[in-house]
Each structure stands twice: as structure tokens, then as C-alpha cells.
Length: 256
Image (cartoon, rainbow, N blue to C red; front, side, top):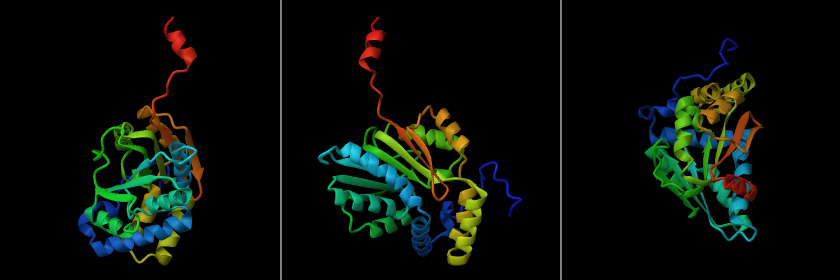
């Protein structure tokens, strides 16, 4: 195991990226176990905290402004459901659109979120999103972008940026041998899904180091307002998409 090369991202394809191998019953088990893993390891909470801060800012002091969030690679939309539950308690008006390319996953997500009228699930490809520019306030990509190459992620971020009025929120895995060891032990002990036992450790190997995320952002010509490490072995970054207006002084200088 320790002969594994952690210095670069593993290009291998995960089982869940090969839909011909998976039936709906496979996906039901996979998504149920993914929800448990996220709950145990805090993967969802890492992104949720940043989303809550941004939603509160957009909604305003009186919470009257509606907020639209799009979650790409939504899986069973458990993060969307958690965000809506929080927004209800705060009396914020929110709508979440979960997007996934797999029709079976979309079907399961609709069943999982049936009691949340604030959530809509649509099928779509992140590389050609079914959304118009400025169609939402926030875009979330949680444990999703590691399925793509660095150059593909650069192009995805460039495509997504015009869609969100406020920001992109990205949460993904930190490639580290302790994270690999932990998820390998956890999935081998508790998972009944071949895909989870294979893809859990592989996802870590396809995860990121900080300098790789910084390279991706430079190539996409984006500057994050924050790039944070969160337990357990997650990076969370917030990339503003709203235009930065010049200050009055800058405007005066431009007219000289």
C-alpha cells in the first residue's frame, strides 16, 4: 500500500463512472453508504458551513430575498436537503436544483427529496449545464470535481462561473496517505458495495493537494476568497463570480 504514488492524481476511472456496470439496486446501496460516509467523516458539513454563510448574506437581514443554489453531481441530494432544512429554520426562501448526469441517480434523488418542494432534480452534464447565465446565486460541487482531469476542471469552472451570480463553492478530497488508509479500512469493514470499497480509496487518490487546486484556479483565471482545509481531509474553496465594481477613487483615476 505504501508503494502507492501520492505525489500526483490517479487517472483511473471509478466504478460509478461506468454506468453499464450498475443497476438501480446498486445505486440505492451506493448512495445510502455515501450518505453514511459523509455523515461519519463530515464531508457534507465542510461545504454546508460555507453555503450557509453565503445564503445568509444573499438573503439579507430580513431574509426576504430568495436564494437559488445549484448542486452539480448531487447524488441523492443529501446536501441540498440539509441546506433546505437549515433555511427553513432561519425562514429563508431558498430553492435548490440538484443536477446529475445519471438518470438512475436522478430518480433516486427525487425519491429521497420528495418531502422537500424546494428541491428540483434535473439530469444534466456539468460540461454543458442546463442553465442560462446568471440563472442562480450559488453553485456547489461537493466531492465531484475529482472525477475529472485538472484541465477538464479548468474548463468546467470557466463554464460554470457565468451561471452563478454570487459564487462557486467547491469541496473535495485532500490526497493524503492517512485519508487513504482511513477510508480503505472503513469501507472494507463496513461496506457491502463493491463500488464503495473500490471507489472510496480511489477517490482519495484522485483527490487534490493544495498547490494543484491553486494551479487549477490560476489556469481558470479565478481568485478564491478562501481556500480552507477541513476535517476530515477536505479542501473547501469559495470562488466569487460577481463582478467587482471599481471604487470611486479608481473611477476618478480612470478618467484622468
